[in-house]
Structure formats: structure tokens, C-alpha cells
Length: 110
Image (cartoon, rainbow, N blue to C red):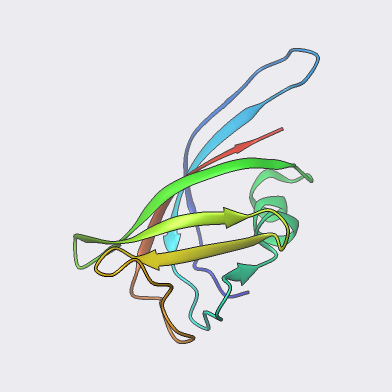
């Protein structure tokens, strides 16, 4: 996985029987994006950011290129992958360098 270094924003949590948290992050896209998305998002990337394992419940976000909104972000639970779709045609981008895309996401977890 080669997502860019994140700039973490706001983080919130609940201290109930089922604690939930929310983290806003901004980072560069994968410089070696593969079809199906960047795998290991929670297992690798979020553990590095939060310092613990979490169960991702939802990821909402967009990708920006040169200040224009260009991509939508989806989290695929079964593969622990962060997947992108182009807003221009709704298709997943092919394998390649997406480091020029700045991703701004909100991760909900427990």
C-alpha cells in the first residue's frame, strides 16, 4: 500500500458499551493503485494512525485533483480496501499512479 502521509483532522468517540469513533483524514492517493482498491486500509493505514486495530463501519469521502472534485471513495469491508470511482463516468480508475489525487475522508469505526 502506498497511500500518502495523512493529515488527521477532527476525531470523536463515544464511551458507551459499543464505543464508536470518527476520524477525518486527508492524504495523497495510492502511487501504485490496483484494480479493486488499495488493500490493507484498516489493518495497516488506520493502525498506524490510531495506534490500535479498529473495525471500520463506513468511509465517506472524495478525491480532488488540482482543486476540482474528481473521485468518490468507497471502503470494501471484505477486502479491507479503499476503492475509488471517477465522477466523470462512475468507473473505477485503472491500475496506476493516483498520487496526484488528494483524498479527504471521514472514517467511522468501532
